[in-house]
Image (cartoon, rainbow, N blue to C red; front, side):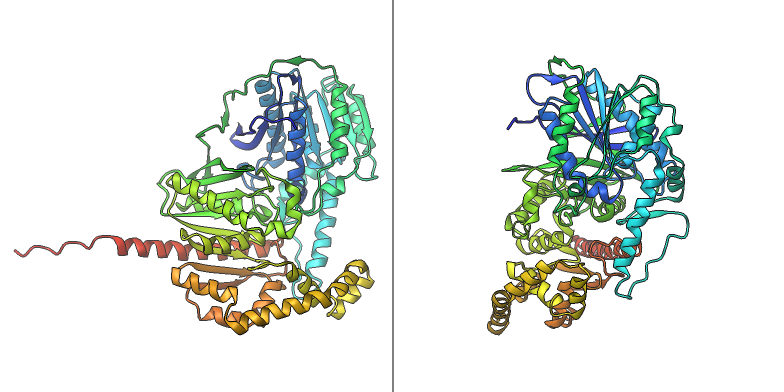
Length: 611
């Protein structure tokens, strides 16, 4: 396989907006004269397809294309909040600025833009604003914003049905015109702007865009109104079936890159007039902060406070981990530093972008906070297919990767004591990081799936919460649960369940229970554990059945908060709001303890001299 030059994180500035991007320089001694810009879809689709888009950028770079992929303003690692005004204009302006930057740094003859869903609509709007885009690949892109919103609302109704099925939670519609699904939201203003967006009403510059490739999505054809709009503008329009779109948009740990589409688009790009030239050096023009070596990062406003964000890498044997550091700008960072870990296969922005919001808020309070991608997740190197195997997701080497990040932070003087924060598998890594590294002062664990994992655990849970419950058989009859899965669980249960039960009985009987030993170790070390559970979490049920919750009540270093709702990744906005508040309280407790320790360590004031 062709070795790629290192990718280059950067920030683009346009009209006060900051757009985060990663530039992939081309491989080899020759480069294609078409550079590629990749514009993401919105919300949950952005999260699910992120690793596939990274793979796509690397594939294009191997073929000789300088490739840039971006986070839209108010999303991902870019600046801003979804509630900011003028998001539609800010998004299309970001596409214009990214195309201009790509043209400058690559010295290419053409820029081709690839857009998925909302990203494709923004490319169309940017072209109408004379963006330097000569070719476009538009995948699952309608001619109007209204179908995107309709799909988003349908997704939200499906979520509401799932979350409200228990009868314990009654999801409420947004009262102010906002639209949201998958834990992400569009403001009322942005919703209205998308409602009114129609490519057929845009003035697409005649002959600027020479070629357009329209891709459907898994047997759904392309939008004919979109085809007509570009044909009337003089473009040569091709259309093809967008196979494997659904495979790219499933849950992140199961998502697979659409290899056939990669090959199709590469073949289409190769049909453009092309030539080769010596590789151009990647030099940032004015208005760009490039990350290379010890970068300046970017300044952001959080209320009345300024913070700095800087991408960082952590060297590993398989390549690099990737992270973004938020740190206070107006005052030196304190003794405590926070590291936020992946929620399963969700990249470092966190579930519903919660890690970005919390990291910036905490940096404004004087606490440096790192958002980290572990192996194969987000922008970290490594084999992404491994994260679909729980045994490899919960492997000990991932805890060692966390500790390597702590080494980097300590070497940079950003703290000597650390708080680890994670949801799901990230909570597991936080717990074991606290056990294995004395520098960890506390672990904040949201909805941990397990504290100790083995292959029998999930089978035992599936059987306990599945075939043993009458409702699960009803779900199987309604085909909500695969009958094959139910039969597989029933077939494995006679072998797995006795071993699981015997192991638990023996551990408690002999006093060798791992969790008991861990709790004693952490208590002796003064390391605090903060648990945060939504309803219906299997580990919470097990801790309750084993009497652990009563045990936690008597441990001074353990606290537990219950969050509203029953969603594992905190998609409901009331759950996100409660989680942010609970995390802030936990951080307050840690900062109070740091202040107390500092006062204890300070030399006592000398008594006044007698007159």
